[in-house]
Amino acid sequence: MSLSKSAKRVAYKSLESYFIQLYTNPLRTKSVTSAIIYVLGNYTSQRISGAKVTELNSLLSFGAYGLLFGGSIPHYFFQCLEWLVPGKSALATVKQLLIQRLIFTPLYQLFTLYTISRFEGRTHRQAVQQLIPIYVPVLIANWKWLTALSIINLTVVPPVLRVVFMNLVGFVWSIYLATKRRKASERRGGGAKGGSRPGL
Image 1 (cartoon, rainbow, N blue to C red):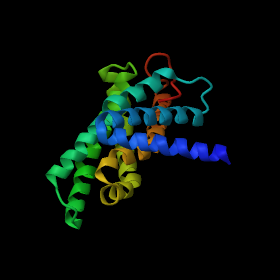
Image 2 (image 1 turned 60 degrees about the vertical axis):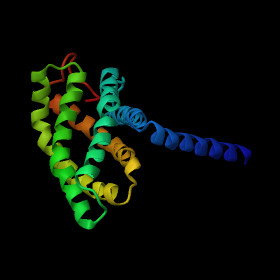
Image 3 (image 1 turned 90 degrees about the vertical axis):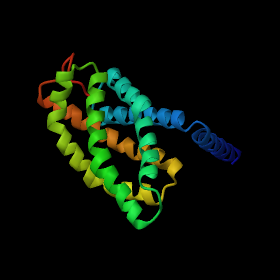
């Protein structure tokens, strides 16, 4: 019983510490959180694929992307969105949603797929070759499956937690991305250097 109480106390303290960091150092906290979630998503994708050996380069690439861009870009995007379309009315929410889904999402998805490929050591040409066959299917899947969650994010989730919410959704999404990229690499007979890469 005391162990259970002790575990709860640690959990509450950790959560409290996280929220303090989120308010005092929002960008750093969101970036670190994003890096952890991207790594976990990629690792989970590798395990689901049946990989016997963990592809560290892929883990590091996803982690680096999450650290540098996965927290920072959404952080500034949501700030800009509040500035561009202020207010809590239904019309304001619809405008914010359209901007996010029709402008931000296509550009961010393109940037994500390309940048992760470059972090993995691919040349510009190789990254574009990997991007072309999967970009539209990934974007359509994003619109199809994540739009409802985007509505929840804009209407229910407090602004300070929107990137965190996106990152939690991003855990499942990063598994999907890694799996989609791996299958695309396998269809082409392997990824960049070293042939087939289970974590892509």
